[in-house]
Image (tube, rainbow, N blue to C red):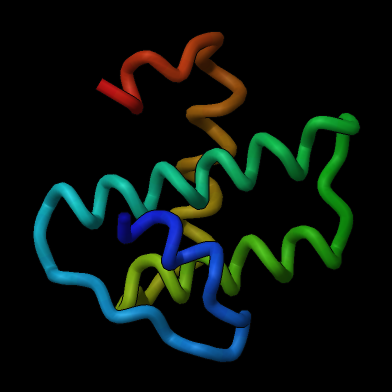
Length: 88
């Protein structure tokens, strides 16, 4: 499963995914779940934020605006109570 490969790779190694909508969605879902785990203690520190940004860069190869995606993830997290829409 490709999503498992994402977590098995080192931070310095790029993961090559097929460029399709399903893979893109799975990659962003993995980053979103990582975000939720990072904020489980009520805050995200600088080290966690750095790792999240690296995860976005790895998960979405060729992305130009990592902060925009992170802001969208944060906004979604603050405004929803369920992951159902993301995983269906």
